[in-house]
Image (tube, rainbow, N blue to C red):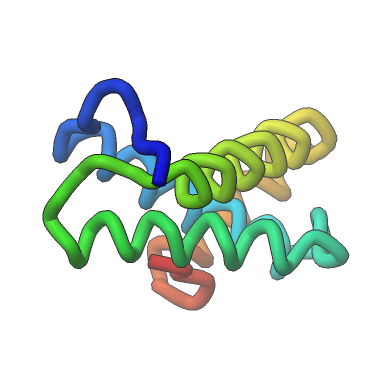
Length: 99
């Protein structure tokens, strides 16, 4: 099983969790709903890292996280500020929390 070259820090993990939660919130807002499996796989990989406390990802986990981040970036390319604000509020209320 292939792993990441460098372990991620707790701060990095926090950023990944935030990105995953925003991806899910934007998806619930209608941005990328057809990519649910990508968002869920990334969230699951991040959750596995968090729960295992190993902070070193396997190749499949890294791929899932990379694809989820690409989806997150694509969402940010098409949303308006008010859509982003609504997604932030949703994530803060924990209505779209993935991890």
